[in-house]
Amino acid sequence: MPEKSAAQGRADARNPWLIDTHELSRRPGSSRSLRRELPVDTPMGIPDVITVPKGSTIAVDLLLESVVEGVLVTGTATAHTSGECARCLDPIADEVEVALTELFAYPDSTTEATTDADEVSRIVDDRIDLEPLVRDTIVLALPLVPLCGEDCEGLCTECGVKWADLEPGHGHETIDPRWAALVERLESTPGDNTANGSDQQS
Image 1 (cartoon, rainbow, N blue to C red):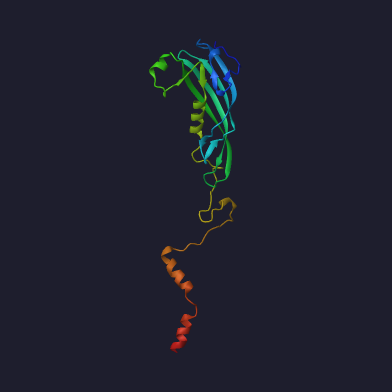
Image 2 (image 1 turned 135 degrees about the vertical axis):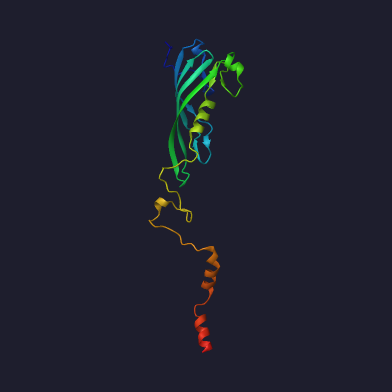
């Protein structure tokens, strides 16, 4: 049976994203649970669209399991997001939860020796760096077009006011550009010219 513990795991005092795996040993089947609030020092996401903002935290609930090739990390990460609606530009706040699954290879394992540096995560000095895994997974889960609601009608393209705040039947009179010059000419012509011309002829 896997050895399980509610131990929080030791983190580097200078970097809480680094998790010490020394307690796991290399005995396949041993495991540790990890629950922690991790600080966000750099916004995650798309600036001016939607991000996990700087100064917030990400809650992780993980299981670290020792396997032959390394440490398998599974669980979830949950974070609050902020941004603006892509249609009406109102500020929005939401929450994102993602599933995490990643193998961190031991330095002298077959996996480490046969894969490129960017193909698999590594354990360095008995430590796992959770930040790349959590950051990449959360950023990929964020919506490219965040909305305050699926039924958001956006803004009027003429006046820029939210459709939700406008009166029913709101609209703007437009003139066909082919007639615009003629309308402008007629508006600038005195209304009594025709009458005056008729009187002069008579």
